[in-house]
Image (cartoon, rainbow, N blue to C red; front, side):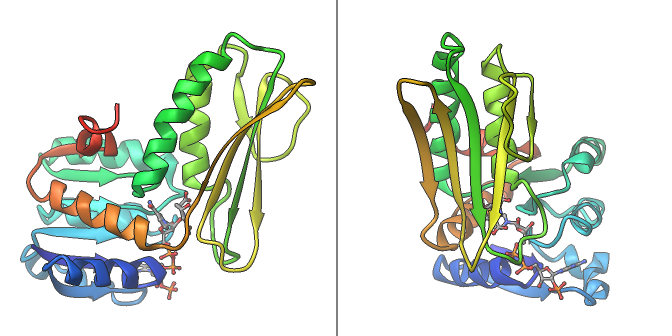
Length: 241
Ligand SMILES: NC(=O)C1=CN([C@@H]2O[C@H](COP(=O)(O)OP(=O)(O)OC[C@H]3O[C@@H](n4cnc5c(N)ncnc54)[C@H](OP(=O)(O)O)[C@@H]3O)[C@@H](O)[C@H]2O)C=CC1
Ligand SMILES: O=C(O)C1=N[C@H](C(=O)O)C[C@H](O)C1
């Protein structure tokens, strides 16, 4: 598979290592200030592009790939307000756009388990639900994209919750997400149900960034052979359900 890596930072470098390990070719990488490399005729030589940049730049890069007819896998978080626009553009152009807030297999298992637990907790309003996420200090967005996906899954399944807020709260219908930034933490996510009797905690801790990169490359392999707006459910649906 001939790939282009857009965003040659921490994830871009990790993804490059995984691509090479899996026998793929990196045609070129693009970092901030190198956007000229994304000329259609160059980009169009790729089977797939993998985009991990910043909340402010993700939409533009996804649009460029779609207009060049190149399937794009995007892991950038913090640009939810423009994702629907990207999905519409993908449909209009009959392209391929695969986004996930978290490409690691472990977190995608957590997403499923959390929704399952939320369906049970719907019947136990004596619990309060909250979340905590911890990441490195370079992270630009809060709460993390993964925390937002987890929160959306909980809100969909628990009738006594109404909205998430990005701080601690005593409001019983709100899901408070606490974001902590320290050191070089790769990513910790906790979902906590607390009552006077006990506490139930779901926790995922990434041991590094390899798991995100392997998932993103698997997504690129999948995207290179599929059309439309793709998700981890499309890729893993038959395995994790
Ligand atoms: N979905 C998932 O599984 C995961 C998602 N992420 C997300 O991926 C994103 C990137 O994370 P990470 O690699 O740690 O961040 P980094 O800051 O290490 O890397 C981002 C890179 O993108 C570059 N960049 C900025 N603007 C552009 C542009 N217009 N075109 C091309 N490159 C550009 C930056 O350059 P410069 O520094 O010079 O600005 C930097 O090198 C974040 O949104 C993060 O939340 C991270 C891990 C897993
Ligand atoms: O910025 C990161 O590092 C990460 N970002 C993603 C997120 O916002 O959820 C995924 C992972 O937690 C690492």
